[in-house]
Amino acid sequence: MISIFSAVRAASRRLPLLTDAERSAAILALADLVDANHTLLLEANAADLARMDPANPLYDRLQLTDARLDAIASDLRHVAALPCPLGEVMEERTLPNGILLRRVRVPFGVIGVIYEARPNVTFDVFALCLKSGNACILKGGKDASASNEAAIGLIHRALAETGIDPDVAVLLPSTHEATAALLNAVGYVDLCIPRGGRKLIDFVRDTARVPVIETGAGVVHAYFDRDGSLEIGKLVVDNAKTRRVSVCNALDTLLVHRDRLGDLPELCHVLGEKGVEIHADPRALAALDGAYPAHLLVAASETDPEREWMDMKMGLYTVDDIDGAIAHIDRYGSGHSETIVSESPEAQSLFTGRVDAACVYVNLPTSFTDGGQFGLGAEIGISTQKLGPRGPMGLREITTYRYILTGHGQVRN
Image (cartoon, rainbow, N blue to C red; front, side, top):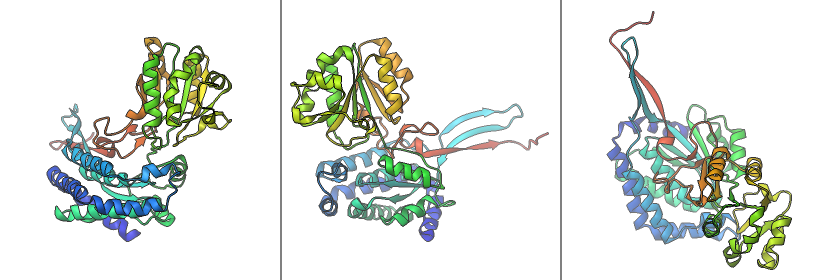
């Protein structure tokens, strides 16, 4: 592993010498290769899917389709067209002694990313890292090993076609030993980003000797306020829950003001049609009794409020007021994405001011927490921590800065 890490470190030092046009050309070449190699990628993905139970919540994340490959190619072209953050002057001023001080955006160097059954991440991470002048070390899960091998093969072809050292992007074996080596690659890896469930993130945070940015795990809430619009509420709850249940911005828990329990049957009607299993507290359970499919209505357990379901299941709890909703989120939320459905400016202000999450929404589904939706082209992850980047991480979030000071022989007294 040390020889691999050394080669990536050496390649990373040459990356900033390339122009933005040269780096973008490689990303565009990869987009063309994705378009031309659907069959290769889908056959590799089919081999991975054959080893996974379709009932596994990760199955949807793992699956590639023609439409998803088209979206990957589109995202690659979007990233290539974005302004390059390198060299951006973040601050410039002249000190009293005449020294010109500038704070300039530069790459981290080498970024390692550990992820689970998400083959699209291989393409996203490569494109964002290359565009921002970073080399990347990819550590995918064994569930997506064939898909990731096919992807890195195309990446290396694109780099070769455009004259860039292929060591700027490497895929490690899908073994625990490779993970351990990456997390301990002090002096070779500048930053490690885990993308996956809480178990993976906790392991990386607790084990790593290199700097880590936590991303991914989301226990996501929607609060339907006393002054919420029922029509908006139906749209928000449906889209947040059922658009893609396996992603980190999917709705896990619906909180309902006690005065709106009578609206629950209509609010949740489309969820019943789509087969969402609701784990409800006693008051919500009574409100839905006879108005929601009985086989999809379950009494909530003590541990349900802390679950990231990643499935066609969700929690439903009654709160007495907005303070109760915020207290519930404070206790069980993961700092990812939260939303309120309310027409009250006072409630909106209270919610956005007090809820502690990377992304807080008003009358919108949490499904918008996504780098592409934020105009970032793609994302390297959704940071749920407060130190450093927070929320969707695009090009700027995977750069750092250095101070450059220019003078004319000044000396310090």
